Amino acid sequence: MKKIILLIVPMALVFGTFIITSCEKEDSLSKKVQQNEIVSNKNYELPAELKTNLKQVNDLVVFENKEQFDKISNLLILETEKYIESYFLKFDKSVTEEEVNIIVEEEGFNPNYVYEAFENYHSIASLRAELVILEAKWLDNSELEGDNPAYYPISERCLPIANANGEYQIGESIYRVEQSGTVYEIVNEDYTALETIRNAPELDLKSTIPNVIIHREVAVNSSKSTNESCLAYVRQDDWHKAYGNYKMYMIIDLDWDGYGSAAKAKTKAYRRKKKLFGGTKWGRHWTSMTAEVSVSDFTHGCTYQKTYKSGIKSRRWAYYVAVHVYASGKIIRTKKGGYFWGEHSIGSRSKVTYSW
Image (cartoon, rainbow, N blue to C red; front, side):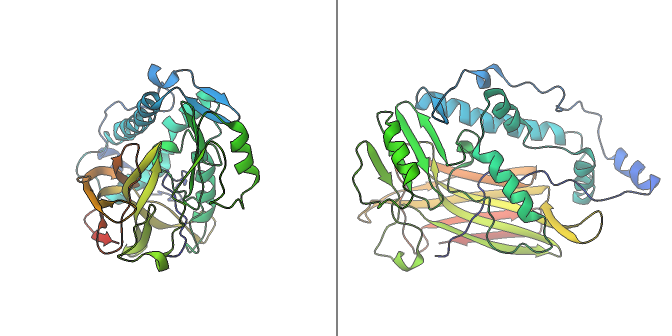
C-alpha cells in the first residue's frame, strides 16, 4: 500500500480571489443573507471548561486522566462545530453554493478560530497549527501533485493538543504517534525513555525499552495485507472528481485516538480557484457533506470480534466531515476483503462507497 500523507485535521484558510464588480450581484447576495446575529472573532469567548489549567512538561500537554482528556478534546470539536454552524445561520435555504463560497471568502471566515483561541490561551504549539501551514503551501499550486504534507495518522481531536512530534500525555502515560502509524506508549512518566525515542528515530521496533509499549508496529504495506493477516493499522484514500474544477477526497483510516484507536471515514471537498494576479490554486469548498464508516474488528490472530458502525454524519455547510467509531482503550484490527468501508458524499453531485 503506498504511503499517503493527508490531514486528519482542518485546512488553513484560503482567502478568496473572487472580485464582485456588479452592484446588482452584491444586492442579490445580500438578500440571500438573513439578519441572524452570529458568533464572530470579536465576541467569541472560550467556555470555562476549555480554560481548565493544563500542565505542560517537557514540551507535552499533560491531562490529569482519561476523563479530562475526553472532556476537553470532545468539547473542542463540539465548540468548533457550533462556531461554524452559528456563522452559516445567516444564509437562507435558497442560497447557492457559489454564493456561499463567495461570501465566506469575502468575509474571511476562519473555521479554525476556536482551536486557535484554545491553543493561544494555553500557549500550545500544536501539531494542528503546523499541518495547517503545510497544507496551505501544498494547495497554492495549479495541480495537487504528490502527497498532501498535512496528513498525520492521528484523530482530529488529538491534533490541537499534540505537539509537532505527535506527543501528549494522559495521566502517567506519554503517547508519541509517528507519521508511519507506529505509536509509542511510555508509562510511568518516563521522560528518559521519551528522549531515547526522540533521539533515535531509526530505533529497531523490536528492541526492548523499559516502560515502553509499542502499538501498530507494522507499517502500512499492501503486500502484507491478505485475508490471512490482520493489521492494526490500515489506511486507504482516493480522489473522486465530482465535476469540473471540483474534487472530493475520500479517506478510510484506522486512526490513533487518545489512548486507543478509531475507525474513520473522512470526506474533503476542494475546488480550483483563480489567483488574484493570474494562475490557479486550490482551496476548500463549502458544501453539504456526509460520511459513514463501518469496520469489522479482529484479534491479532484474525478471530472476529465485533463490527462497529458509525451511522451517517451530515453537515449542511462544511469543507470536510469526519466520522469515527471508537474502541476505547484497545486497538482495532481489520483484514483485507471488504471488512472496512466508508461512504462519502458532497452536495448532490457525488456519493461514493469506498471499501478496503
